Image (cartoon, rainbow over all chains, first blue to last red; front, side, top):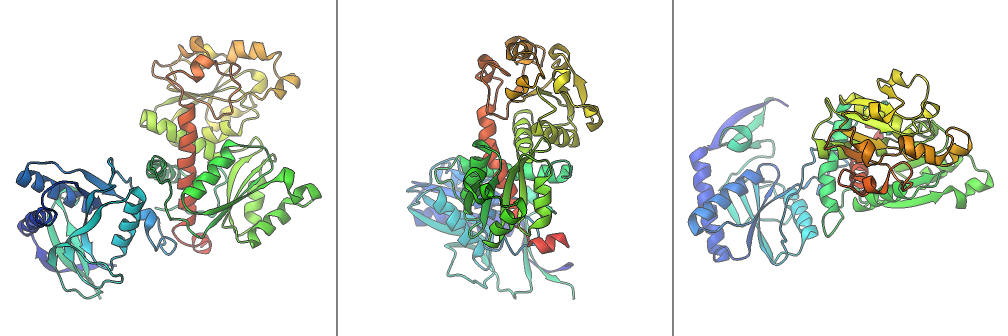
Length: 182
Length: 313
């Protein structure tokens, strides 16, 4: 499906400011870094979680544990896909039991990825609580899921596609709305 | 990338790309095995049946655990206690299993080609868990996974397969898999246990350990079936052990960081000395763990990503 860029909704500075605010909000809501852990959903949730962790270190001076979650095996559409999504490693080298887990992803859309991530987390332990941080919330939820920390709310139509580009993966920081060429 | 096939019958017909996909997928599967809760919901509602016409503990248990860790339902049929004893044919047994709703049938049979026959007969997916002296693809895949984990590559590696090459399906699957990924494969053993024309598979043949094991990165020691001696293929077990049993002395022909593999079960002190088996070069127990991870990868790749019919088209 060929895509064309409709509009850029965030640039590098915008992303940086949004993550700075989210980091402050995480610290405010959780009253510091006690028991706090960050877990990024592969793939682009991971660099975002890393950036938030770095920001928290800058603000509070403490390093919070950082994990990476691959939710492929928990997807609800595996038997419908015509291809194998690339399976990557889940790396959570610490116990999440009784921890305050902040789950980080790039875009919140139907909520199905977050549902899968919640199930995956529950298989790793029993956290005290789980919060969700996303760079972009584009609406159209299909499950009763909401984010605790949002970089930007972007009203979209279902045919549009939100593409998040991050330096660590894509060599550029930006968020754009794409739409299929008709 | 996907596994574009209904069945996995051998490494002879898998491409290098497909082998790499399986090995790459096994890595995250191994992480699941290290968890406290070793279960993911991926294959919920699918069923996996093991149909073994030959005795086996590790391969069968490994497949069953792999399926269970992915949340599939499993059942196993042992021929000794089944209607095969009443004269049921392989085709009828398999059809019966299929109409009970099996998605995957894992078969081991003493006749080479039995899984291939089965694959043509049933719509369920078929995985070969060892057919005669032909192939044992998942054993070779777990050997390769272990080699990749320890050595990081295949290209340019020298791998020696030591022992009874003639009767070994493990040897054949390893030869096909390893040569496809660029390793240099040697077979080492007595002439009476070396099949003619084996060099046509792209391997070098050696009849003496000091030559065959020289400078190798990996030695895969095959189990010597003791009943072969009664057939006169070698004069005595003691002589076999002296000439081809892997001990610390013979290990010195190889590279200092040589990796030693054995598909098990081991005849302790016969094809491999206890010092080597329990020594720092051997990864025999790790192979068993890796076997579960590789079989999870295979089941996942076969059962996700579209229906059988779509794949065939």
